[in-house]
Length: 398
Image (tube, rainbow, N blue to C red; front, side):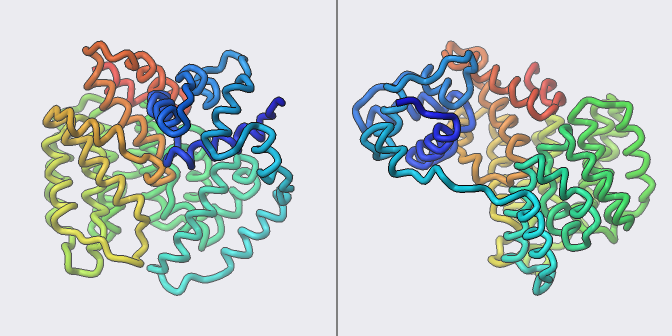
């Protein structure tokens, strides 16, 4: 019995659930193959799994034997048992109905700006919209002009992964619609990041000029304070203006000393330190990044029911592991990085951090005889092509 593509995608989801995590990288399939062998005592080749999960696209359809093994692994007798027991007949709601539901939901006002349940619900809506380009195109005017959507679908859930693939259009519309100083600074910081990641020096000059038209940043949110400084650090790094680069790094340290600390209510997440550590890792300043990460871990406390997704804390943990790996060359840390569950990272920065994970692993193995090194390299190239983040080629070819 043959299986169609829709049924195959459902089966893949069930395999990932059985395995305990989403398959993001080709090298994870060797672990999956071993897990299948251990649990049902049947061997399936890594090559076959690569075809199933789309890492090899040679037009070869998976055999019935391969599909039957995966069905058995998921608790079914065979393909027929899988199709009979799985609901494959759901009829999707029309795009118009879904868009109207989203609009109606956003008419509900949050209890306050710290309403975590409301923010979390908006995060799920944002994920759905961004995964469906058709829905995104049909809602972009609404989400960039509606006041609630501007805050909860854009500002609190920026889609970094899409900055070089059309999301910059959303940001430009958002700036046009909102027009506040915060929106202009926030939006142009994202556009500058987009141009840097795409290695687009022409447009980056335009955005940095707008960003630096805001001379004083003390009255902005710490996140925006850090964004402005981070943009200048990145801009001067790619343009090899090292005198200005040093100046902005020094400014980053000075501005950090003005940030609030725990137990003040506002100090529930190290917004400023998060951004600064992130950008300093990008430009290979690991000692400096370590300074901000230590403050983030020491002087801030996670508080339940406040408007920061748990995934941001996971990103912070990952950044710390990546930075220590570069700084200390500790292979034990690389094992932790490899096992890091990327599905628990911020949705809008999943690919952004996945590329960094892969590059760390590649750099630690490129002079070894690891048989997966070529697969790892190809996976990184695929991610860079998918996202348009050419900037990471700098770190790949170090």
